[in-house]
Length: 303
Image 1 (cartoon, rainbow, N blue to C red):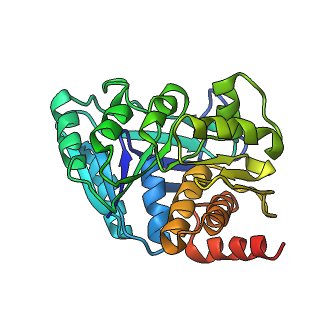
Image 2: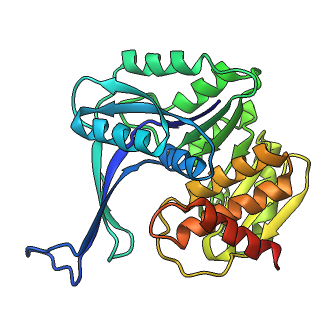
């Protein structure tokens, strides 16, 4: 079974406002309401590719109920643990001003609820796949990823980790199957600036030396690089297309890679599926559909 974890999910209210002005009443000309969070994005893209998953994490209040309702309607299984107080955060994203958003805080998560999630994860075993994505809420211990991977170490669970800085570095010794920093995050870890695919390779290999099995580095318009578990290096320039929405592109890449690997156990195919899924989401208003991913994949194969 495939599981994704989103510790602090959201209900994303995505709006367009022409000629936005501070201090005045502005009216939307388009609006969209979607369940959000990195793990949820992974589950959504997997579902679009016809692959079932169970979304885990915490939800609260009427907004949490709406997140679950929308996910279940899409076919994503609900494994969320309800929080008694507060409400799942609402994130306001103003898509007409690139990068402008206001993200909510989310509910406080008690030790008891954290333990409930750990107990659920403790049932995973050989052949299961787990995605750990995004930041950890302030109310949770900051070593949550580390504790999860320590608990599952040696059980044959294939784990993908999409996190930054210490969250990522502290789990490498548990040999995650896949990690996906972008070039800026990779450069920040080692105190360098990485602008080209060639420059990325030696630093990605350093993360592999520290324990990661596969290191997938996304580079937006520069493409992507994979250092695979068998030691091969794959790189690809960015597919051709118009950037519409970069939100969720990295999550889509992780989902596409794992979907490709599970299908053929071939790293090159998995890499191209990851690049195709990430790019297709970037070229779309929403997370990529299967036909959109397949179209970009064919473009990659035609080079």
